[in-house]
Length: 335
Picture 1 (spheres, helix red, strand yellow):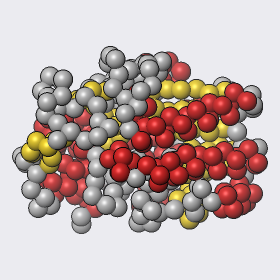
Picture 2 (cartoon, rainbow, N blue to C red):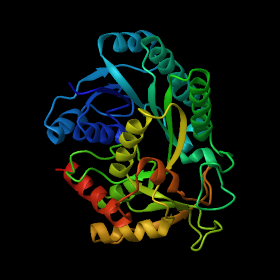
Picture 3 (spheres, rainbow, N blue to C red):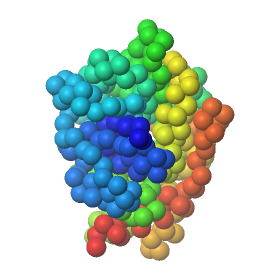
């Protein structure tokens, strides 16, 4: 019988792709999601891709009763924790909600796991914990100077899980600092579908290209970068999903905390991403300069060599593949 892996936030953008990758790898994924920032419409789409039922519990990871009963009723072997709020700007405007959701949810999850004796955990952290790095590419031992509320919640959860793993040698915990996930499943059945206005560059570009939205705003054109726009490391969401599964498999033989960057190792400016998306959709995209956003940094991209060494993982898809898959998903979901 296949091992059951719980994916918190498994109906969300990253979580849904991890669920599909788990099924392809022979696991039985189980979802818990509160559907605040995700949609139930993704559930039948995942079933079509995987050709198997994907059980889903509607619940909040902060709800102790829900989490306790979930572990009591299912023989869970490992957890991949994706649930949480993730918009940098929103976190600056509403820090209480971000600490409550992201840190509070992690504490409740850890309590439920400890009570059930389930001690293998992969945490979807974020490269925002680094803030503005002293140099690029960024290694896992770079200073942690996060510039945002969102990044601080991610770092606090990392510290929680590091302390849990240090206090009990039975725990195996992977802390995956992923860079900028983008793209969609090649089937165009699932992809990024924000419940409100998109916050990330690639879905914003897709929205502008597909609708009457007139232009994109480029937040800062005076950064200390080659073309003045922010530079980020964009990693295909399916590569990211494969990294989570590889980390979970590695943790089966590696107790303690393990921290890894998941990124392409290449930095692309906003203008470079706009150009790549124009190639994907075959039309020009208007843009305008806008003020920098609080919490943003000039440039940040990964040194993913440790993940390649430890997991045998590397990002296989480039920026053009990311934009092509994102555009295919955008056009398919409008039919």
